[in-house]
Length: 227
Image: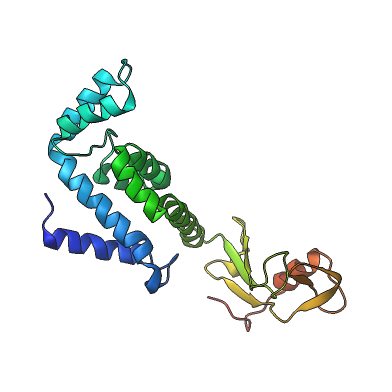
């Protein structure tokens, strides 16, 4: 069973992973449920095989969920159980499908534990972490051509500023290892008729056709801001 030092180390490892998709005040959205989840995993570890054997034997029988749950709790020696073959170690062994496995792992807990993670709304955070991993993967593979900060009031029902990423796996040689950051927040034209919060469209005062921004970015020079 994990000691205090192991749990502390685990918590800070989570914090390192959260730096991209979360700001420090938001760490608790993931750190608390992940710590609880890890604690459950440690408590159930000694009887894991016994629970899996019992579940395999009973899952296609005539027992309803409550009756089966009581049997599995008894096999676990606790008031809760998890009948997934996954463990935290196995979850870490397949990072490409971590979101799928983690969701399946949580759903394999007994109902009383599932209610805890529903309270945390943790399934939503799993998807957010997965999306952040996709962004990290794009950057690490040098597929991000440019990041564009768009003007506010560009979309219906979304008045705040937004960003778009231009992604390609065919970067020109001169652009490899670099990311262009393009500030287009002040490059806009008013629309003839507003629709909710949508009052602007991107453009330079002369043209707002879809290819205009792409041509502008494509003509970048070394003096423009790049990473």
